[in-house]
Amino acid sequence: GQQVMQIPQYQHVQEGEDFTTYCNSSTTLSNIQWYKQRPGGHPVFLIQLVKSGEVKKQKRLTFQFGEAKKNSSLHITATQTTDVGTYFCAGRGYQKVTFGTGTKLQVIP
Amino acid sequence: DSGVTQTPKHLITATGQRVTLRCSPRSGDLSVYWYQQSLDQGLQFLIQYYNGEERAKGNILERFSAQQFPDLHSELNLSSLELGDSALYFCASSQGWGGNQPQHFGDGTRLSIL
Image (cartoon, rainbow over all chains, first blue to last red; front, side):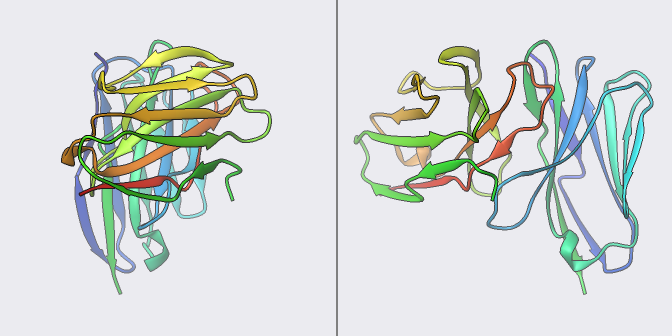
């Protein structure tokens, strides 16, 4: 079945450093969504990418969808303590969405 | 506030028991998804319903069952509970069924098995 892996599993950064998480699917995806889960909270939708090679930005966050539509990345520029949480990608395969394993980000002030 | 309501927020019970978790989706959403999240783990997809019909099935144990009612609320039934079933159970809803719309998550039900 479809598998979606994320690396790294954990990342500690100093405040102000950049951060990137990568998402890789075993199958081609129709779209990919990104969610953020704050500690003690529930996942919250951030963005959806649909087109091959698509790049979208939200303030300090940059999202990319690979040319082959099998991978994606989320890059945060100049992290802040408010960026702490777990970031999940969710890939849509054949009529089904599979969540990635998540990357837990800790930001050291 | 996501608009998705889950009850109860916390549930403490013993092994071998049965519990029911309830979810009311966002107004206008027809799909309901159930997920299990163990401590510091990812989201394990259990099952999806769309407009009352089962749409997709994930790694849901035979001891677990779910349904979606005509008013679109959903219930997840967990029976013969084991210690390993302790987890946070999320419900999410979306407008469509195919996964091309965002999922909106509730606050979850934390289940503790003693």
